Image 1 (cartoon, rainbow, N blue to C red):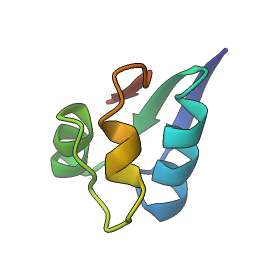
Image 2 (cartoon, one colour; image 1 turned 135 degrees about the vertical axis):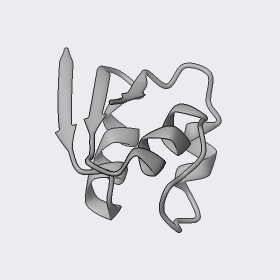
Image 3 (tube, one colour; image 1 turned 180 degrees about the vertical axis):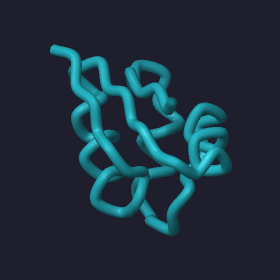
Image 4 (cartoon, rainbow, N blue to C red; image 1 turned 90 degrees about the vertical axis):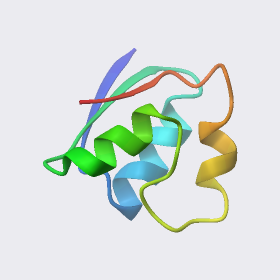
Length: 64
C-alpha cells in the first residue's frame, strides 16, 4: 500500500514510522530542514523511539 502523510510533527512522524515498516510512505512538510533530516534518517522531533526506527534498513519512508 502507498500512504501519504501530511506534516512531520509528533503525530505525523509517529504514524509515518510505524506505517513505513510494512508500506511505502511519503511524508510531506513545508519545512525543508525537517525533510532533509528525515531523508538522512535523523529525527526532526525529540522522541526516544523514532531514531531507532529510522535507523532500520527496511523502513520504507521518503520525505518530500
